[in-house]
Image 1 (tube, rainbow, N blue to C red):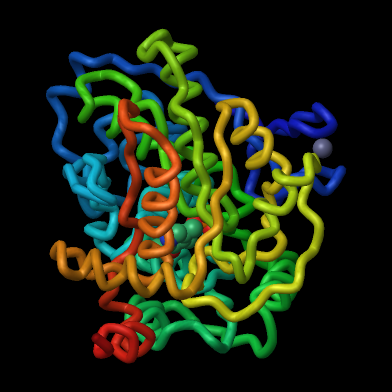
Image 2: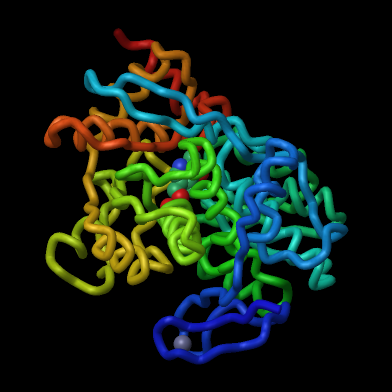
Length: 374
Ligand SMILES: *Cc1c(COP(=O)(O)O)cnc(C)c1O
Ligand SMILES: [Zn+2]
């Protein structure tokens, strides 16, 4: 079976329900040998479990699935250029977090865990709650008070216990870590099984682009679960000699909360705590990314960069995407604002893939005052 390993101090551990970080305090990675049998993949249904041999869940009967994934890869014209967008707001719970949740909660099911805790600004909590209820696993979701009402209603409708925490997103994380002493910590930011679900983003792009890599991926980055998952996925494909290269990783942050941007600009190996301001992009308002060091390394290794976008640019991208038929949440609009910025300073010629990560339907009370204006 796969093993936990620490990229910081090189310790390794067998996989078990109690461990969620290294003794040195660093988040753990997973040592796992994926396979990509194309003939078998092509015979399977259009969901992310078609890459079965690359997902670290041993038994089929452990799998908790709603046929999620294999989202369309759609061409779009942004800033006068053609790029590709993954329709990841079409997941059962309305965001790409289902990629991580279906794999992590299936694994938890396999380990025989019956109760989990998780903290989230909304979408991860919704996804974890949905897959837990399908497995009959009890689940407490900790959220900051300011979370969108739609996300709160969704978490409760899945039967999870909702714990609203006063104060910042960081305080919510601290309270959850305390609770994690008594229940499994199904954390999207700490748990490496989550990343071994989000990595399916890379596999789908690989298949949808005719078994090839694009030149660049432009992705939102808070804790980096999509960005790091995409990096793991393309690294695995490259190691298996299924693609020639790993795409350049371009991360998008809000100017109101951009610890990774700051660290990259200043040449730091890790992020420093920052003053965070309010932002519409609640999904990436993370001032202390758990895997900050790994994100910076992945971006540097691939020759990528981080761009920041203002609130005004987020609103304008949100309206523009609405007019193209995509009702997305402000965090996803921030990504598109970043795509525009990237395209405006680059000449053509690159194949670019980005993602619409979350639906607007959960964030109506935040969106309606913005879209009503001309
Ligand atoms: C969680 C989330 C993100 C950012 O993911 P990170 O793992 O924090 O980088 C982006 N968009 C949406 C809609 C999200 O829910
Ligand atoms: Zn360690």
